[in-house]
Length: 405
Picture 1: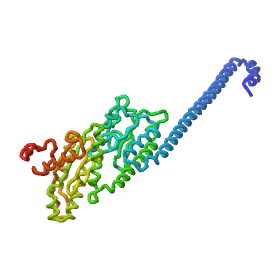
Picture 2 (picture 1 turned 60 degrees about the vertical axis):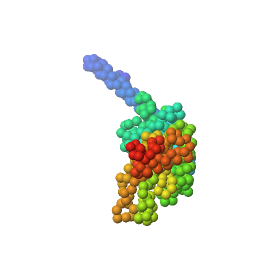
Picture 3 (picture 1 turned 90 degrees about the vertical axis):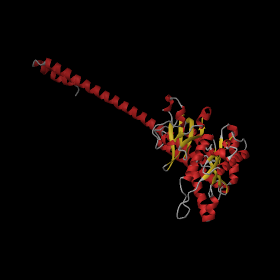
Picture 4 (picture 1 turned 180 degrees about the horizontal axis):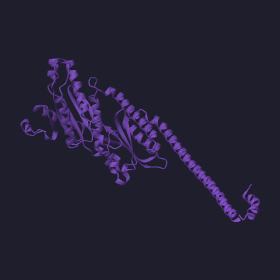
């Protein structure tokens, strides 16, 4: 029964009893309660409608995020075959940055490779950074201080370091890691509308995994391809491979205008080792020396067995000062660490090193080898266990003794 019907029934009795005023007050209270209930119900309906709308928006956003992720994953998986193609390492790196731009949705991409010997990141490939490439290519930033790597603590990475402060926070860094070893660092900037963000680590980790596998496969393929160009005893490049590498690097540095360092390294008094302990001990010594040389140079450098106990090391993009630092590190690595050769006591050995710089000392492959060889001969005849640069080779051994480098 509604409110008017109730009023019709009780009104005569209340009037008769003189209670009309009380009834009128009760009626107004009842009407207020009724309106309040109606308003509360309306508010609840509006709240439910708003909640439903918000849920629809969230569902739409979630569906859109899933769609974008699915499309990104599809692009990454589609690119994986090309990434893993047996190509030269440089071509694989170029493929990786192109795939990163296309599949992750960024207009600026930089890939830096970890140089284990020097502990730095070296920019090697990019998309959209041609106008800054000469600046980036020269960067060598300590990898253990790079933000975004497992051990980094906030220092700028290569791409971040050249950007204004206002843009640094927009760079997305993706470390490339194999096990516990840092392989490289991918930096992404200038995202498009459908770019993958740091909020979706699954997609980024999948891309990084594909890229690391591609780099490792390319390196393994290159190692296999160069197997016939390796010295069978020490595993480093043989004489023929050295000549090919030096010619290619001299030609490349001639185009770029950069300097190149050649080191000729000779094991001092090695004949005495063979004569006294035999050739098996001598072979062990050679392999141990090579291990020390490889541990003391960059990944981009080439260590070759030039012949016998003599080795040649090509240091691309190096000047006299940096070449001399590397040579001293090589010399110390041998002199300060006795070599086990299956004998009762480790052998204490030394190396002499000749250094020549392209184009300062020579502008041809043959001329550079001749200069480095002359510097090596000067180091030998003036006491051994030293580094001599060609331009500092004096006319007499006596003069050299007062000008040691």
